[in-house]
Amino acid sequence: MDLATLKEFKPSEYEEAADGYRVTADKASTAKDAIDNRISAGIRNQLGGKAAEAALEALKGLSQNFHYAQTECGLVSTALNGFAFDMAVAKRKLEAAIADAQADGCTVNPNGSVSYPAGAKPGDEKPNDGGTVTGSAGGSSTSDALERQAVNIHPNPNYGKAVAYANRIADALKEATEADTKWAPKLRALKADDDLTVSDRDWADVQSDTGGVREAGQEYRDSLPEAPKDGTPKENAAWWNGLTPEERSAWLSLQPGTVGALDGLPSLVRDEANRVILMEEYARVRMELDTIPVPPAHEWTFINAGGHPSKVRTDEWMEWHNKYGARYERLTRSRVGMESIQGRFDRTGKEGLPEAYLLGFSVEGNGRAIVANGNPDTADHQAVYVPGTTSNLGSVGGDIDRMANVWRVANDEADGGSVSTITWLGYDAPQNIVMDSPFSHYADDGAPAYNRFIDGLDASRAADSDPHRTAIGHSYGTTLIGSAARQGELNVDDVILAGSPGVQVSKAEQLDVPEGHVWNQEADGDVVPDIGRWGHGGTDWDGAWIIPSDPLFGANQMPTDTGGHSDYWKEGTDSLRNQGLVVAGRGDEVELKPVPPAYTRGR
Image (cartoon, rainbow, N blue to C red):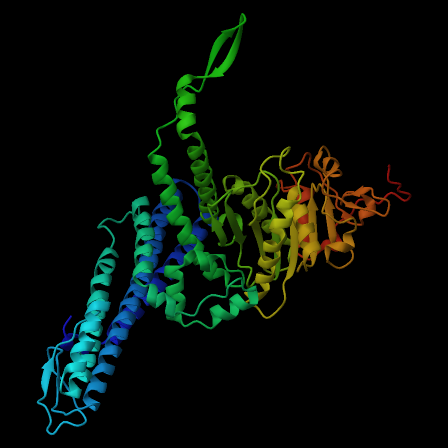
């Protein structure tokens, strides 16, 4: 890049273009939300039949187009700001070098060379002639040493000044040229193919584009206000609220994973960031699955062993399993989980179900998913549900459905108040009932994250009033809630425990909620509470294990009309309705089980 071009370069023009793309991204986001949460939701709530299904499928494709446009326009905006930032740095260096040279009596020529006036060193009888020098960018230790030697022996003291200015000019021009060379291919890459279908490869390209812009814009990224390191939800919220629209857009474009994971940020922001990660990961997983051969059709065969037929796996299946099985199962689990989350998005409006928010997401390890029904930032009543043993990303669909059922009941019982119910799979749950669930470290490790998330619901609060908040736990999830209360302040008003194997404390009053606000359910045929007596219960004064189903614990025992360990959220049951009443702040209407008048715990 030559001197005249850099002098005439106007970073503001590119910043204005970046603002235009950012506005376009915002409009695409608004259009996507209108399709998903108003138009499609209205069709699901009021219409049925093949025509409605076809319309919903077409609208889903249009929504994906807007989502893709939103994401790519955000990247373009960030890339243009990054380019303008790099060029502005180079231009400021050039302008400073020119100003310093002119103030020192030198002249900067159109080609970047510097002319210096006549001058004499101390002791010389007459001045030496002036001249012109051309700078060199960069340099090595050898070239710098030779240059210093030339300056020292030159009879005109202005020569050295001119060389320094010329080098500064050359450095600025080189920096501008490198910025132009670096950003040009990144900007050219930010374009879609010429069809109207957003494919897996398109989203894979978004992931690649994000990495390219992040790499090219490292200096621009470093200039942005840094997110708090291990910040509290309040600190995270203060940081986000202090960013400009341009800075927020850059963070969402360059680091959506970071933004989506920060407790305390607005739910709308976390949802936007996590949905990008969801779409990118879904595309990557599906494309990777396509590279794995299909499992053999025949997994089992029979052999004659000792005169008796024995069922064994085929050699072909075992060969496939040994080579691809573990990766296939991991990817399939992730795919199923992501489709379950998308399925919840696609049910918005069905039976009045509100819009959904993805407040946390990851495919790492067993996976993470935090899904809200309704906006918790404005809800009058919030419930945060923790699933138990064997929970992972692949099984999250059932947990999402449970909280959708709670939302429907609580919303009907809330006397016009708004409700948000949240599935919080934000920890590594035990994956094996026998090998893992007896241990408490899964709960102890996950409890701080649960407390941070709940505190974040206060920090991101958009409404003036404080919400009524309920913690709901199932099975091992109740142990995590107990650990959260034991380790720190459990920032809730009510606690619901279902099928609990114990909560690490022996008294309801130790769960950090007002007296009378701990609610327990144990269904007929649910063996987990009895098993849990030997693992996660608290102990009374003589060392006996106590779990929430014991009268000595002091919880409100809510009646259940379901059986077994997993049906507490079955539609149309009293078990579900009782939970909904508590979530809606009407727990005083629950008809409790009578407490035995003279209860004596067997030893």
